[in-house]
Amino acid sequence: MLTKFETKSARVKGLSFHPKRPWILASLHNGVIQLWDYRMCTLIDKFDEHDGPVRGIDFHKQQPLFVSGGDDYKIKVWNYKLRRCLFTLLGHLDYIRTTFFHHEYPWILSASDDQTIRIWNWQSRTCVW
Image (cartoon, rainbow, N blue to C red; front, top):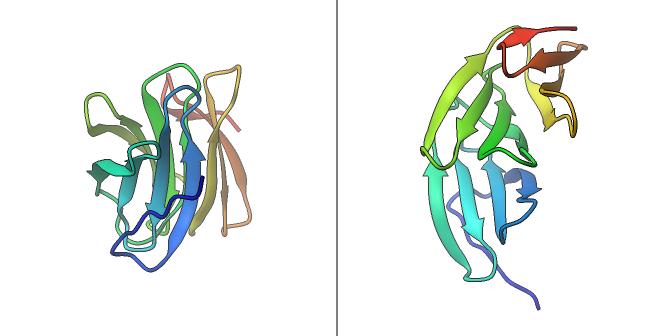
């Protein structure tokens, strides 16, 4: 089955499937993150706190969380049940290209155009490497 999702942004920069629900996160060039139900073909929610394109996006495997990173040099951790950003991690000096949750540890991995890869502990909200 093919499904077409339309957004007002011409460029989708990142995608993430939810591990259990029929959801897709789409991070957009205009700075918005969209949460879609791909079975119902409906937009569930929008998150708009980044200044500029959002490139990295990833659902947490067990918690109601997702992480995003963008051209504003910021990593944001969101709770989709509460429908808000919980906190922002700062430290990169250039555009963030990817963000991922580690599958076992309470870590977020990020890569940036500042030529660094960082590991963050999302529970303590600190950079550990």
